[in-house]
Length: 145
Picture 1 (tube, rainbow, N blue to C red):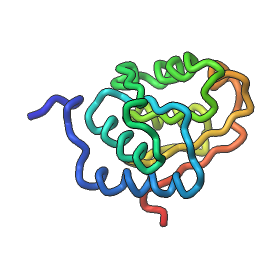
Picture 2 (picture 1 turned 30 degrees about the horizontal axis):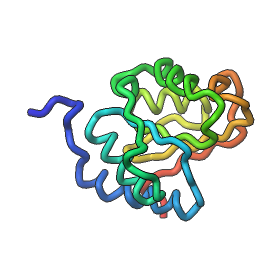
Picture 3 (picture 1 turned 90 degrees about the horizontal axis):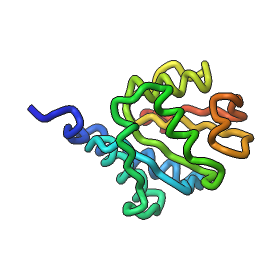
């Protein structure tokens, strides 16, 4: 049996991730930075979505803190992004990502596999996330058409 960190993305994830990436691309999503957990399934998801967004796979930042982290640990990673990147995508794991999303907006109570939580903030720096409410919250689900 493989360690959790080395588990591959399952068939549903391999099907849903490119679809989610395609939907994001149609909406004009262009991340300045993509940060992923080093776990195989998270990194594979990041790569599949990045391809659809014409994001160079070599530019995906891998941050071990996104694996097996608390919602507060995830928020600390976000805070360290500073003020330069305007559009950020993070790839990681539940329940931590769902907890972080819920802490940013009570509208999000769960995040199914391959869901994308979109938050927009009127902030100068990512260090303000958590102390400022988002101006827009949207949860995109793989089952949506």
